[in-house]
Length: 154
Image (cartoon, rainbow, N blue to C red; front, top):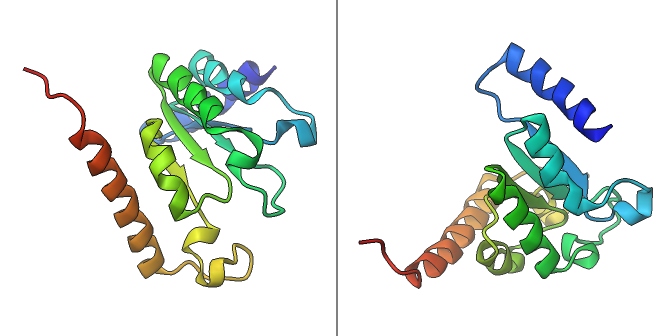
């Protein structure tokens, strides 16, 4: 059923704008709302033709991505997405101190809202450009540190 729904979404979006990025999204806290296993999302993304697979949290109660899916499971999610040629996106009350782990496991896209809103308030706080810039700079720093230790191709 998930594949059929996502195929229809992909088809509709790509007919409207072939360059649009289509993301198949699932929930790290799936057990709380009765939806599919998060590790099924990369396969659904691949089989439907979506460009990326994403995990987020469904219930916005302050619990975070890693509260529901530990880093090793997130790493498996990223591996499965990449193995099928998809981008991997992770979100869910992500904070700057999560960026080292998210970068280490190869996350392509990090979704944030509260972390870049004034007062950290995802509902009432306004997104602030200086917070976006600081978050991005921290993400880039972790990425540089990670890639500095990788062997170069000859």
